[in-house]
Image 1 (tube, helix red, strand yellow):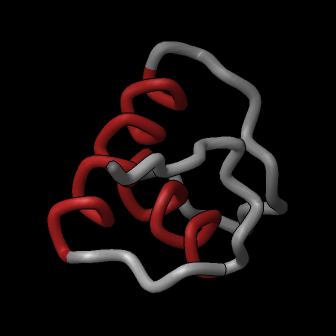
Image 2 (cartoon, rainbow, N blue to C red):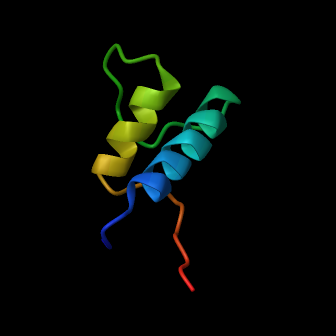
Length: 56
């Protein structure tokens, strides 16, 4: 995975957390974690978020 800037990281986590909050399926097993932001952070760390970054 490419190295993300702090802005890209925040944007990806925010977008994924919004998706989860709106009812999108969670891509990992969550044991007691209910906060969409925490779930999105875990998904990003495990590199399974279906979001790509395009740089110009």
